[in-house]
Image (tube, rainbow, N blue to C red; front, side, top):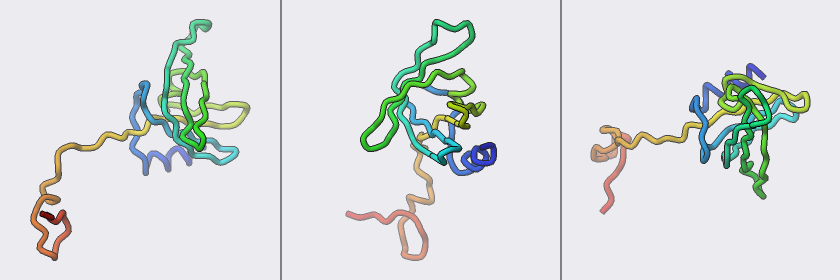
Length: 121
């Protein structure tokens, strides 16, 4: 599982925090699974002394499936992997932010020789 996590961190941009409305990537070792989920709510588990949270998510499947996991902060932020039913799991928020400033080289006029955007009127 540690090698899978290392490989994912090379190809996916992640955030270190988690909020309602975030998209998380969930990885499971058995069966081998990679799936996205939308975080619906995060509520403190008041029945425990330690910091545990009920994280309700909608798996982005057809049809969507609603699940609730009880996790500690390091588990739901991808700082550590965890197990459920004896099977390894990993969860971390995907950083979907887009740089709003256009790159200068993408705005130059397309002369047919270079890449970049072509102005169409």
